[in-house]
Length: 158
Image 1 (cartoon, helix red, strand yellow):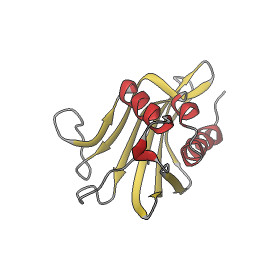
Image 2 (cartoon, rainbow, N blue to C red):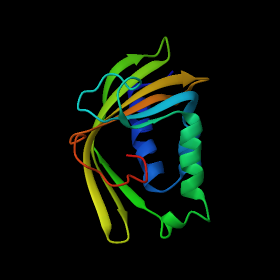
Image 3 (spheres, rainbow, N blue to C red):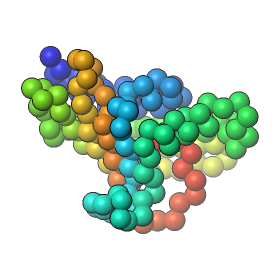
């Protein structure tokens, strides 16, 4: 049976995978129909009929991971690095009988490459589903505090 601590530990583990560049392992945590969404507007509710900073299905997430892992990805020489500083996640939905869970996590995200460094304040919502006793990501929504600002390229995944 999945516990609240399992759900919270899952969010911490996901951030660590990204920080350590373990993108293939990170990708294996997703459901096949998973969606990664980063809204453009603060408190945006519609990812389909409104522009988003990112709205990626598994096909696009796989492409992103292939690019990040690629030996011939010259825009990633040297590779970008990131660091997530996360607050303890809130478990907003905890339904072990249906295998449905949702967390809300405030964090600061730092991404760096060469002399460039960006700092983003954000809230991440993880919609998780239990599959054969293991948690998987059905959807991750990353709401930037200053989503309406002008951004350069965000290379990795906050």
